Each structure stands twice: as structure tokens, then as C-alpha cells.
Amino acid sequence: MFRNKEIIHSRSGSAAVEFAIIGPIFIILIAGIIEIGIVLLFNLYLNAATNSGVEYLRKSQINRVAITSTGLRDAISRAMPVELDRKKLHVSLVPIPNADLTKVVVAFPVGDSFSLSTTGDYLLQVGYDWSALSPVTKYLVPNASGKIQLQAIHLGAAAVRVTE
Image (cartoon, rainbow, N blue to C red):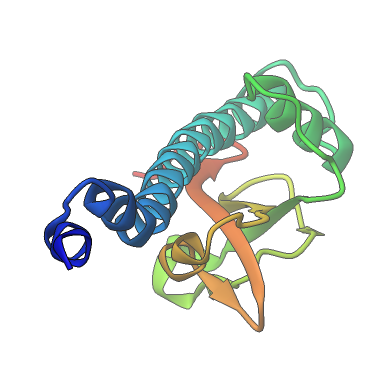
């Protein structure tokens, strides 16, 4: 009889039971926080790389070098401090008609399109297909029809426009 009372009032296994309940939730939260940090860092890299793509447009125009889709993709890829899977990188260069940004449709997800005339303002969209590890990230990163894609958008000019 004395032994049954000891078992009922014993607290020696309570920490293990509490950890078994809270541990998996804690590990999932920590993994989600780490992945969100990686997504934010990669998004920062993608914005800087998109800025390098706009710089490529400017420098090519100044140096009178032909602007190509391959050259633009290379400029964006070189600006990334991490190695990119080029199949997941999507670059879209869209002209802004009459410098009216309201007439430009921003596509999501970003597809591969390259439309360049000699002079004008352009909208450079860069997208990178992201493979989410945790279910939390799927809700924080924009997605359309199950395709999760990080996106960066910058304005650029292919030539200097002078008006009086």
C-alpha cells in the first residue's frame, strides 16, 4: 500500500512528460524562425541583385553596349552572394508607356519576358522560386497557385530622357 502512494505522488518523470508535449512545438517554432530569417536575408540579396540589373541597363546604355536578356540575367546572378539555380530565376523587363507607371501590370509570379526598345523607362521584375521547408513560411511568402516565389521590383531607364 505504501508503494502505491509513492507512485501516485511521485514527480520524477514530470519534466520528461512536459518536454514530450512542448518539445516538438518548440523545435518547429525555432525551425520556422530560422527559415524566416533565411527568407528575409535572401530577399535582401534579391533586391540588391535587382538593383545591379538596373545598373547593368544604365551602364550598357552609357557604354553603347547592346542590352540582352542573357546579359541582364548574368548581371543579376553575379550580384548574388550565394549560388543561384538559374532555372528558378525569372527576369521580366517591361516598358513603362509614356512614363506612366499606372499602366504597367505587375505580374505574379514573375515570368521570363524581355521587351526592350532603345529609349524609355522600364520596370525590372525579378522572381526566384522558393522551396519552403516549414509550413509557416508558405503563408508568409507570396504564392500563387501553389508556386512560392520571392520577388523584387525596381524602376530603371534604358536611356536618359531630356525634356524642356
